[in-house]
Length: 322
Image 1 (cartoon, rainbow, N blue to C red):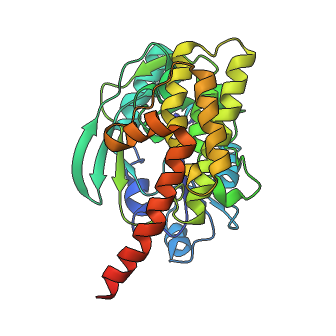
Image 2: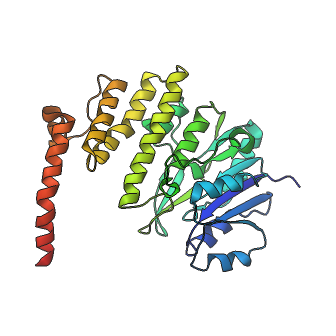
Image 3: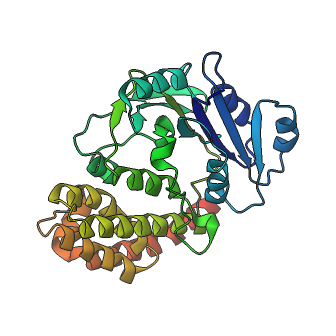
């Protein structure tokens, strides 16, 4: 029997959320292939998976999400494929509706908005924002939804890997962003789902692709690597339009600020790149921060902010001792 949709779900120590994610993918009308990558869980996930007879389980060894997803793609048989985080779940009939849209339009990607939840409490619906430049949108022009809300035609993306982009695979926190941008570079035929597909959960626990501390620094480096590569490819193809430069700068400018907190030289290089991409760029920051950037420039402002943090940190510590 032909597989309609393959759903790839990477997980590690997510037994608290995994059953809901898996159940939301099952269908009584479609042939859905659910491929679960258990990346060395220690919380009972393995035992739970042994009780699920309709899943294909790929055991991981702690090599991270991209390694597992790439292995799973070698097993995927669906006409369309979805990548779903085990923290999240799908609205009822999301696969069915998107598959039908894709089949009727021969779409390469069936896009959708998403519902946002704080833990299990609904917060808001973020609808799909129509665009006539999918690349610009995904670079940062407008909110580009979430790639778990999309169905991808498998043959269209079968040779796009989830990339690590950094020597340490555990820093591969922007593999999904790179994947979508690489797909966008192929000028896909888009179709829009009439319903919101994804329920994206916000919670206080670390996500597989989000980390604090050293991992946060790695995420910033990953984002920088992705944009360097994608903008390079666009420039080589003479497709780096002014609009796409402006879109990228919406990500690169705050990225320069974040990286300057730990590496001022690298942050200032990114800031210079922003102005090379868009010579008339004006920092979007408002209030006193915007005034500082206008008067002191990027380096002067970054140094002043660092001094401010150095002064405020001991004061905050002293206040906590009282």
